[in-house]
Amino acid sequence: MFTLLKEASIYSPDFLGKKDILFCFDKIAAIKNSIDPSALDDVEVLDCSNKLIFPGFIDLHVHIAGGGGEGGFSTRTPSAKADEILKTGVTTVVGVLGADGVTRSVENLYAQAKQLEAGGLSTYMYTGSYQVPVVTLTGSIQKDIVFVDKIIGVGELCLEDHRAFQPTFDEIARIAAQTRNGALISGKAGLVHFHMGLGETGLEYLFRMMNETLIPVSHFLPTHVNRTGMLFEQACSYLQKGGYIDLTAGFIPSKEDPDCVASYDALKKLVDTGADIGRVTMSSDAYGSVPVFDGLGNVISSDTVTTKILFDELKVAIKEKGIPIETAISLVTKNAAGVLKIHKQKGSLETGKDADCVICDKDLNIETVFAKGIKYS
Image (cartoon, rainbow, N blue to C red; front, side):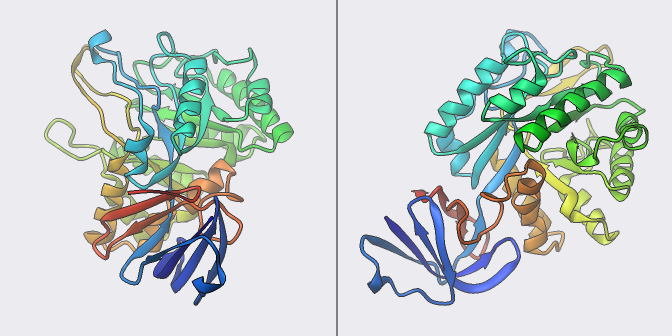
């Protein structure tokens, strides 16, 4: 019934100092300087005196039903498994379809979200895929958001990519309007989540949305914005004007891809320039394919990553780039919960919220994960 974590160094993500945390079933019951376990029946006590505790991580872009297929059926990637995700510290995921909205479907994505939920994760999802017009579960973007519990928005819509369905600005504006309306009725986030490719016009549509419509910028979340240096510079400008951006883990400059910006370098620049980090998130793009194309658009290689990459790169930001722990962790906790509008349950360690947390040693190695009060090691 009760779990008591004693004398932990707590990052909520703001640093709270050394405190005790009490879980009652799936909720945080109390956070105090000291909690006496003798007053509790049926309590498990964990000595966390040399541990750091963070809120459970939120990965808002995961191909939970698998991805890939741009190089034929042999390049399809498998679906995600709950135990594999949980051990990486991620306790909440948002499922997304990508380029393949044909052999995979919104129905398939929903079923996979329910399966992962049964395995201990908290799950949400976007309706649609790269495709425009958007293919939905109920036949309507608004109905999907209003009536389907897990659907919190639309995505990932593909822009500036040779795999895009070449949507016009007016089409994107109508999709955003439908999403906004569904969000108002349901009280959900109503995100329009954009996959950004290598095209030179980059975030042009999003700047136009900002200037030519009355739809609040909080409904738009472009991801992969550190794919190229040029796109990242646009993203910095978009952020400065009040927009929200999502960095992607896994973009490491190399001989084959020298122009991308690693997430930790992007975060370092944002911090150094005084950007509003509260509107920055970070996701893994896990279980999708990471294809490499030749000049003719043919796949020459394809790989995939897991959600482990998310905390791996945050640790680089903290240990090698000097980013404060609370700043780095906020991207996958408080900030993510805010943009997804699930901040009443997720994203910080506070009384009444879900008992999701990550317990690490002093070197930031994950030792134990709690998801809704259940322990996974």
